[in-house]
Image 1 (cartoon, one colour):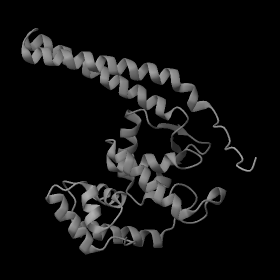
Image 2 (image 1 turned 180 degrees about the vertical axis):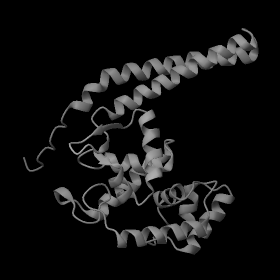
Image 3 (image 1 turned 135 degrees about the vertical axis):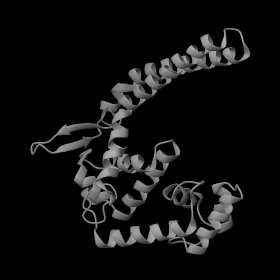
Length: 246
């Protein structure tokens, strides 16, 4: 299998494959590349409907130049000093994988990048300026992404000793996110049941909405209950790995 960065010709093949409706796995087989490589490439550059080979190639070159010009310090994707003896390249690759998974789950691209950067730092908090430097994006992009993540219960704001605003992810991040999801689903239940009254109880459309409401009501309650039951897991230390020599 070929390694290294995708060539412009390969990106043209990706464009053609997407236009033909091919799955990422099939495009990857045609190029003899891992499926994850194609998935990251497409999602990082606009998604399947907006991907353009020339723009993707240019963006990749620009990212490479930025990394050479402004290496990042310790933290997610850092290229300079790495805490705990981590491999900088492995951290960067994992950050891209983590970001891709968030995008695939429905998180907008910039929000996913900010979330990954925060989650993969040991401190779990960064200032707006630090996010701008690490991600090489505009302050406006960071502000918009943080506002979205805060609305989803995925980050919170706090002031440090220098009165700077910091964006924080903590041990409750997944719990808060699950509860926000449950509330959003519960709101959809209310809206669906409003439709039953508008369309007339017993009519085909109203019956469909009622069934949707019953289904989502069950899901919302299940999510909230499971999150409450599992919350303590977020505050426990994982057991250390067993010594294979014993």
